[in-house]
Image (cartoon, rainbow, N blue to C red; front, top):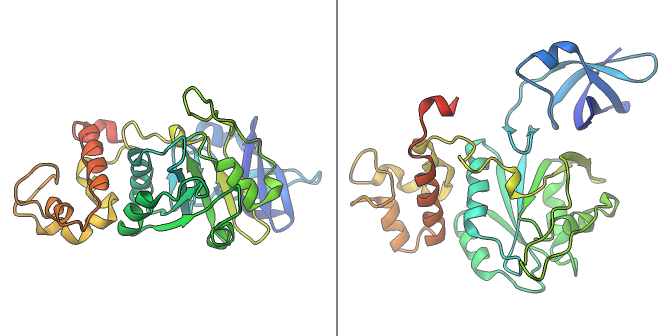
Length: 294
């Protein structure tokens, strides 16, 4: 008997696939171990169910997107948890992750946690102006959690956030059955200790799944997940109205004269912090060779 389903987690060569019949423990056929394409969390797969109730993975459906680090596929939206309270989230970290998501066609939600300690007014202003859906929440008081929970219903959402930002506490608040251990913040460094060890899709009672990830460091942001320098401008959606308005063709939007994007920044139409992040990211990818992008 064959069934289709989604991979919720993989441990030690075993994959746990949610099907209409329930969660089935599967192994991948030998050809997957030799092929370049390995099964990852979030894959839609076809399995062959054995008499003992276990299964073998037969095929993987084409992916609509995939994050490399963490390895998760078919993500509907990326939920970036940040905070203006210690440990404060740098906008560059947020912008690295949102750029990767935009490049892969993944929607992004910005969630400002710990709003009972600091409302994060500047973060709210930056990302609402940039066109993102922004939620102010507090895992401590429950403020804003219902609205966020509604935004997660029926979708596969990947959560990311710098360590100590309260991501695990927020997930516990969204669904008490997460039973995640929350980390403490070191008073000396004001940095949290990572509490999430692997990627796993957790099903929500109202439908949909959440992939919790170990934090921003888990994303391959050193080379922007290999975004070409010419494509980076499109990873900042608020740039779009101005991209073809520059005086010179091939404008990098960094320091060129007659740049429409720089003019929009000066006019307050694009948040200055977003453009500063763009310039730093452009600097990090401008010298990538074509062979590094394959």
